[in-house]
Image 1 (tube, rainbow, N blue to C red):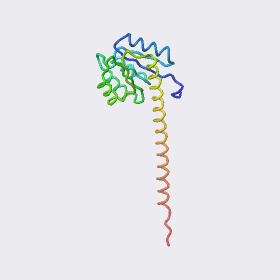
Image 2 (spheres, rainbow, N blue to C red):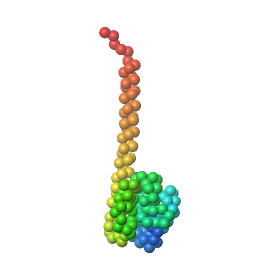
Image 3 (cartoon, rainbow, N blue to C red):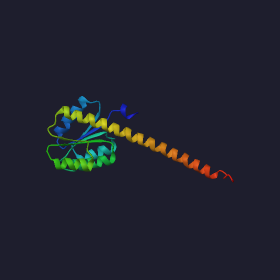
Length: 167
């Protein structure tokens, strides 16, 4: 099934159950996507290993593994996933670190506006789909290039095998 036709899978991770419930309910009511939720970063990592993820919303400060560490591990599993860091602290240093080290898509502060969160999720999923399409196109072009290179080598070999004309 093409990526456009399937529901995206979103994982929410926050050690505060109220945040997980609030974001999860919002996304379940306002989007067609499958929403998974965990209040433990370690359990979230296990979920990530068994469920391909399109978008992850993670809290920054969590007891077992912070949001940057979790998102780094998820990025390694799913390089095309859109990653969003959610935090209650207006900490520009960690936002910059998350952008530079993990390549997060967006950084949101608590409390968030529901419309803003929905916009970020929709935009993140759109960008993830665009990235997926670009990678597919790049693979197609690489395959075509290899085929052309093989034909070129074959033609060069045929030219070398032609009897040379004596003058």
